[in-house]
Length: 431
Image 1 (tube, rainbow, N blue to C red):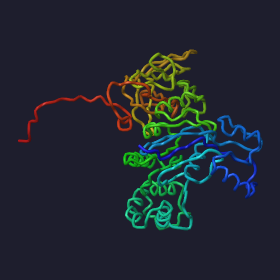
Image 2: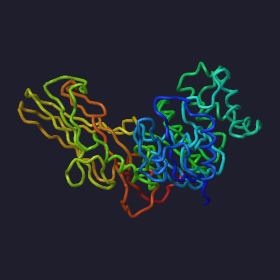
Image 3: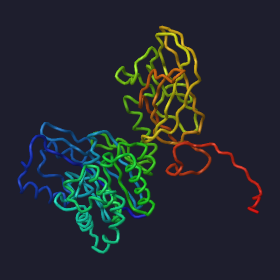
Image 4: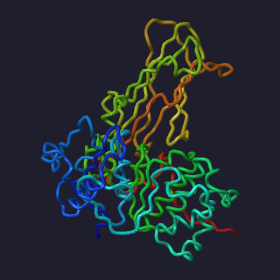
């Protein structure tokens, strides 16, 4: 397949603390040098000597938002870009969308781009939602009859039917995002660029957007997707790039490998979390103090390989003897509770030592993805709540480097593997 995006040694420098101090002749000189593939003539000698290297340094006056970023994207690929806040993700997308120009390097793009970078990008606040659909379509190079053919579909997807003839300056941020995404996804661009703006929408709309992006990708279009939702990146994108401090921390590889490597650098993602006093929703003599996710080897880990056993351990303390206590674990994915696992009722003696309560999940039940754990405890009779902590811990089930011996598409498998019984027989008929 042909290359639609080629990024070579891209760098972007911003001046700190000042706006518009560059003279016009400096802008022209910088543009002319870039057109000829030469370094920025406005840089100091010591800076110019380092412009071709990945080791570009910040100084008291400037900061490099991007440093020597290079990658290539072919037609039909879906690329995820991950990294912490300030890593340079949004700056990269703005350069690709031609919102801002690079300081160094070059970008070669083949095809029409639709970008969704910020809430209300490209919208005129005084125009109605309907008029902004036509405006955005015209910016993308669409003819009026092409936009008209998609108009009803765009309005229906956005859910803004009642307000489509209202000026968008009166829209909420969520309505802005709904309409902007509907326009960008339905006007059939060759390249779709989506930043983290989908986080503004509710859970159902985010799921709807991810489904639409999967549909766009299956039609052979190219997508660049920036998100902090690692499960969405892994499920939607075949490949990913990890940016850190403006540089490429991990180049273009399979998204699962990138996500696993990124997770392992997280300070809180050790597979063991101590619960703070402020996290408890109830106060009683029975408290959950720690949650651990144990892998195959019995050690805490934030990433469990698909097909391995998973043990979730609750470390609890009991300052008063009581009976009829049962603990519970709620497994959550993308904000949705998948299942609740409850222990048998049992007695607990008052003790200065902590108890370890383990819940084992059989191998292969959870498909690859990100999972959150809610934990709690209650007492019978009456199911009296003793403790509850929402999103106490998180872990990921990964299939990176795992050969299951059969072919599957993790984007279609779902979240939980339900063991069903299959039988084959002669159909008895309806007579």
